[in-house]
Image 1 (cartoon, helix red, strand yellow):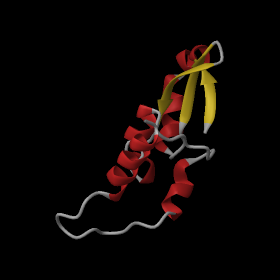
Image 2: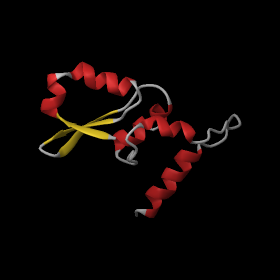
Image 3: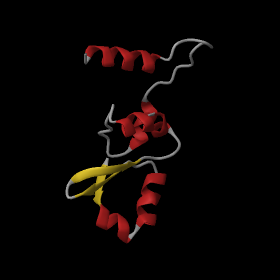
Image 4: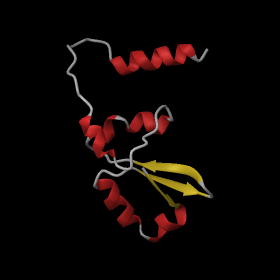
Length: 95
């Protein structure tokens, strides 16, 4: 994941959005502090966008395209969401 300053983003937001459209995740910083994370709206990264936004996970890859390598499994109808179960266990462990 690459990082750019607010100033750099303000000079050419279209170029930054073009990078995101190509699958790159971009952190926007102000005074060295991350204030926003731009993620592609479709593809593998979209599966994780909510978790990244909530701060529950961090993407360390320079590009989100390597997320395509993770396996996908179809769940039977009515089956509990494994990610939700995992996050619930994690929250219980924090208490």
